[in-house]
Structure formats: structure tokens, C-alpha cells
Image 1 (cartoon, rainbow, N blue to C red):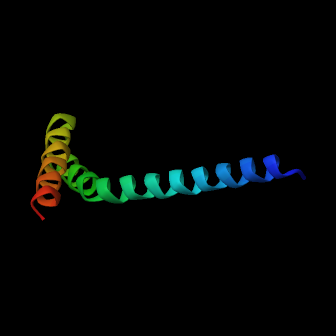
Image 2 (image 1 turned 120 degrees about the vertical axis):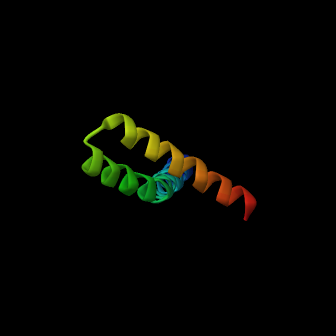
Length: 68
């Protein structure tokens, strides 16, 4: 293997790892909102209220992170 191929491979591995870490962080951040939305959907059987609950939890968590 030449040096350029090795550097390209290393760059792609680093980008891949960064992408996986980003996706995991996004899923971890959305997990509480998804749990609340599922609970609201089970209680009300309404996708509308589940969506409202999901967005409300996302907005509250963003405000909490901004104020921290």
C-alpha cells in the first residue's frame, strides 16, 4: 500500500467513527422525548398529542442545555 491510500483509509475511518458517535449522541438525546411520546400515545391513542409531547420535551431539553 502506498502512503496516499493509507492516509485516505485513515481519514475514512476517522470520519466513520465521528459519524457513529454523532448518531449515538443524537439518539441518546432524543430518547427521553421518544419515551414520553410513546407513553402519551398509549394513554391517548392520538398521534397528534404524542407529537406535541415529543416536541415539548425536545424544546424543554434544549432550553435546559442552553441555560446550563
